[in-house]
Length: 66
Image (tube, rainbow, N blue to C red; front, side, top):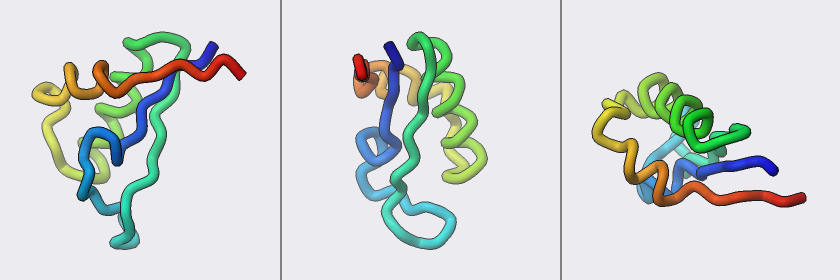
């Protein structure tokens, strides 16, 4: 099972580096890995402190059983 969270589920108006709606998907084997991946993305691309977003990331994390 893969856990994942979509950036646009957390930041609905976020733009990617090309100025388009951000479609980044953080993935991981567990919630901690998803939070780590998304935290890096939020810092590097959106210049947002991920510390304040942890529970938002967890709330939007889903499971792909495929």
